[in-house]
Each structure stands twice: as C-alpha cells, then as structure tokens.
Image (cartoon, rainbow, N blue to C red; front, top):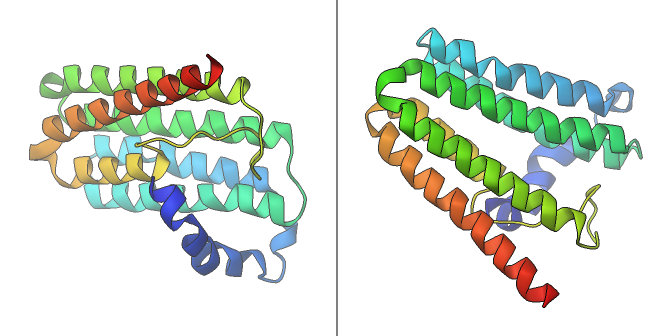
Length: 196
C-alpha cells in the first residue's frame, strides 16, 4: 500500500538522483541485489548480539539498496530474468534472517509468534506467485506485481517496530501475521473472482 502511494515521490527524491550520478552505469544491478542481501542478513547477528539500533540501521540500508537494483537495471537497460529471480530469492532470505534475528532475542516467549509470521509469509508469497504466474504483466517490473495490505515497505516498518519495541513484540507479530494472512486471502479472492 505504501509502495503504491509513495513510490513515485520516493523514486523521484531518493532514487532517480543516484541513477544519474557519474559512474553509476558501471555498477551492476546484481551487485546491489547481493549487497542489499548481505546487509539484510546481517540484521540477524546484530539482533543476536543485542544491537537493536545497529540492526535497524542495517535493515533500512538493506531496504534502500534493494530499491536501487531494479531501478538501476531499468534505467540502464540491464534488466534480466536472472536479476529478477535473484532479487526475489534474496528478499525472502533477508526476511527469513530478520525473523530469525527477532526469534534469537527471546526464543522462549517468541516461538509461536515467529511460527505464525513465517506461516503467513509462506502463504502470502504463494498467493503472490500464483497470481503473478497466471496474470498478464502490464507493469515495468519483470513479472506481474499484485499489491496487498502488507508489502515489503510495511513489513520493514513492522520489523523496525518489533526491534525497537521488544515488549510489544508479540502483539506486533500477531497483528503483522493477521494482515499478511488477509493480504493473501484478498489477493486470492480477487484473482478467483476475475477467473470465474
């Protein structure tokens, strides 16, 4: 939802100026994908070492660089199915590492919440892929992108809140899981309605 409402302004202010920086054409989009992945995965050890502010910094930096790779690829006509596939897989690896880091903070009290979060994400990404496979792509992305209540920006906001507000973790995790389940349900309901 945030992506739909703010992406154009964010792109114009934060991303487009960097694409025009001298020498940016020499940076390969896949390098940025890997860098975003490395920074995102680094959230796990930061949380395990009880460095929440550093973890949030890594999370935000990872998310920002993740928005650059696709923009750079499109800007310099370097898009590829390999890059798109790597980006999707890297995003899931980062999300898993963040959730693993959140679990490591307090495994005893967070286990059920973490299972629900992982389950909701699994079902949601499955609905996303199903709709993407069977829908015609009319976007600038490499595949059909079906938006939902919880997308990457919203997930990162939730993850940030979970890191900075550890006493509210269980509530935030349940709320996050409910919204992710709702995203999957709504996406599939809309898809099935169009196919009948």
